[in-house]
Image (cartoon, rainbow, N blue to C red; front, side, top):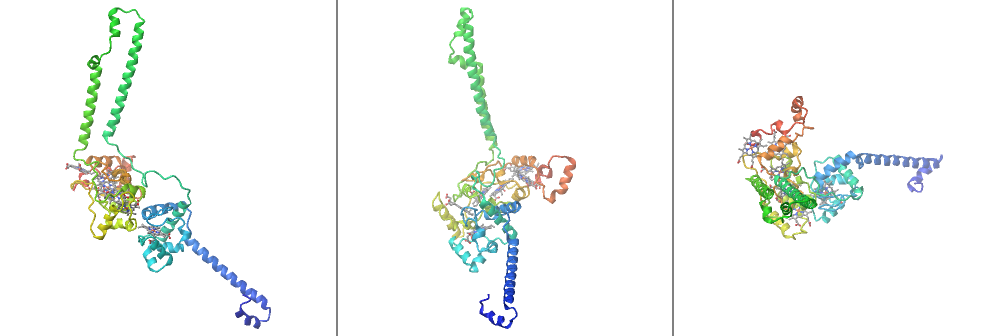
Length: 431
Ligand code: HEC
Ligand code: HEC
Ligand code: HEC
Ligand code: HEC
Ligand code: HEC
Ligand code: HEC
């Protein structure tokens, strides 16, 4: 500063201790700028520090899974870039917040970084998340950072959502019982054979009459076996058991479409989308937590990703080009409906998914492992009623139930079942 020519006249005028003055001015400048600098840093960092709090990371994880996971992973590229290290790569935290709120506005503003990224990703539009608060986005970043710092653990098998309790059908049990019985019968036969030969050896050592000796050594013939009551019993038992199994199987499939898995117009695979790429069910089935129908996604939702992902690795380009064709001709894809209750019954998804918190897999089975969707549950009235008898109502944090729970607790200590809130009333399920 002392060499700055603009200060020269000043120094000439004040001839009393010019040196001290200069030092004073320059150190005051330094001091002020330092104060300003630190204030700036502490301001920005207090507002936008990426937290390492477990609570923030947890909140971020569920926000990330619900909103971002369809297109982003932390460490690998998917539809959008891998987000690991984003806090040091992007121009600023503010930039990230703006971009997440409305990426197209940032791109439209001509921001270099955004435009470059947008072109690099074949002009794929990222969804605008105007509903996310700044704090939410900071939580997501906290999760991304924590996740990026984790050492790679072996991948968890079976996709994002753990399958709920899967009920096995009666016929599976019957098979196990039948196999068990056959094994037990064989064991009994072997033991009997051993006993017979031991007895024979024992009797040989005794003094026996000629007749008795003949009896003991009479050869075992096939006809003597088939005429024995034991053999007849075994045969009758096996035939009866097989017949019983067939009848039960038949009864269970009367008017029931369990296992129905029609061929679809496009070979859409839940195993790839929901399993391998862990796309959230409700990213596509948006109605499930909002209303009666879970809804099948429109072509637009497919195109969010498939205007970029064109190459199908398994079936070549044909299946994907069907999506593009449907999109360009503005024609809906005609999916074949699989689950279908008769008109007389009323079923509401949001009541079960949103209010009760039942997992999709509890009713639909391990969809994320299916290349072709098949109907997993019976979907009979007995099936609905059975679950309403067994399942507790999810009353926590639901003020609607407070009064009911109070009443219920006066009567019994057991948790309140769906049965007790009217889950067995005909009119609840029938129009
Ligand atoms: C529909 C797919 C999609 C979803 C959902 C999505 N993104 Fe993106 N995101 C992209 C794409 C594609 C890009 C690349 C830029 C572009 O094309 O606009 C991107 C870019 C980004 C970037 C900049 C990355 C970089 O390397 O600089 C950030 C940050 C980001 N996304 C955060 C999020 C967050 C947070 C969420 C969830 C709240 C989210 N995204 C949800 C598709 C998506
Ligand atoms: C990328 C979008 C997408 C995702 C993610 C997705 N689905 Fe689907 N789902 C579809 C499409 C498209 C169909 C219709 C074609 C078919 O049956 O395969 C469908 C069909 C279904 C059906 C059968 C509908 C009928 O006709 O009865 C069920 C049940 C289902 N999905 C459940 C799930 C569950 C549970 C998940 C999460 C584990 C999930 N889906 C994730 C797109 C998706
Ligand atoms: C969130 C992103 C996303 C959405 C939404 C999405 N897909 Fe995909 N899809 C993918 C990815 C990733 C692949 C795997 C590409 C690969 O393996 O090369 C894929 C692959 C496919 C394939 C090829 C499978 C194969 O055999 O290789 C088909 C067909 C397909 N998707 C159909 C659809 C349909 C129909 C929809 C809309 C209901 C849809 N996708 C929605 C991401 C998405
Ligand atoms: C309590 C059992 C139950 C749960 C939980 C459940 N579903 Fe369903 N789902 C059904 C029944 C029953 C039908 C047939 C409804 C009808 O025909 O009216 C059905 C039908 C569907 C259909 C096709 C028809 C439609 O409604 O659009 C889709 C897609 C679907 N479910 C997806 C899902 C997804 C995704 C979830 C989780 C978010 C889920 N379901 C959770 C029982 C369930
Ligand atoms: C996996 C268990 C399960 C199955 C299967 C199931 N439900 Fe439910 N259902 C519930 C639970 C839990 C509730 C309580 C929701 C709540 O808190 O309001 C419920 C509530 C209901 C209600 C509202 C009852 C009321 O008094 O408010 C109706 C209607 C209903 N279910 C219809 C059906 C029908 C129809 C089926 C068969 C197609 C079915 N449910 C299958 C678990 C199930
Ligand atoms: C939890 C829901 C639920 C409740 C409560 C319920 N039903 Fe049902 N009911 C169903 C469903 C779902 C079907 C269709 C089953 C199928 O397609 O196999 C059905 C089918 C029926 C049928 C057979 C119709 C046919 O086509 O075969 C009759 C009759 C019936 N219900 C009467 C009743 C009566 C009477 C009550 C009250 C005592 C009642 N239901 C309570 C869900 C329910």
